[in-house]
Image 1 (cartoon, rainbow, N blue to C red):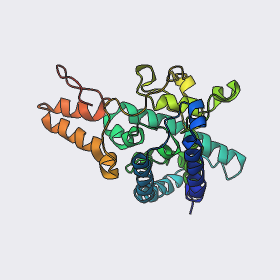
Image 2: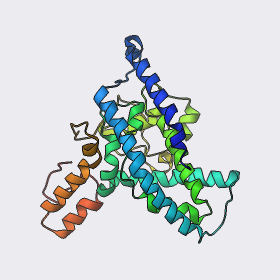
Image 3: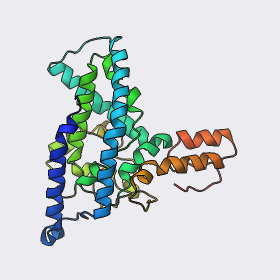
Length: 281
């Protein structure tokens, strides 16, 4: 088993319970602006996490298969020492930034990612609200094998990235020291990413390192964050959460009268509409 998130799951659950206990104390909750937990929302996030283990597990098998094929054509071999792990972890994180950004900028990819933003609450359970259809990972991350990262190291690097991102899904932790927030993703930075405030939309795509500062997508947390989607879904059904945007995308494609508009729905952002129409997303 090469996925460290499996072994980290008990820690995730313990941390989630600890945060819920902390936020349940009225005095402490008044000191923070955390919105706390809601039973149905939490169970929906947990169900999404469990479903992700199944669906994404199958995608991981395909990713490892493709990475093994690419490995046979590697340009260099960075080994399994400090250099190899640095390339694996930083390389995964760099690809993650662009993959994550494209998930917000291309509606077909947004349909796979939108479920992670569908909760109107922001706590550690939100981190578990993972996609079931992360199919682009099959093709993007195996590129690391081309520069000499062994396929099993690619999967471990993904687990390290996900484990890091777990703890930033909280309102309990405020701003961190400036040097840390300059380089690394933090709860403050990621709260912005989950915000529907106009100034926060499509910002702070980072996983571990703040690539956003290099590529012009960084936004600091200034105003209180409003969580959720610009058009929220009102369901706790994990299957609807996972696939509702695919259904909406299919409806829009079917309603289009021109092929270029059908293609436009697929490749433009989630708010795109053909000229003369208003957005329904």
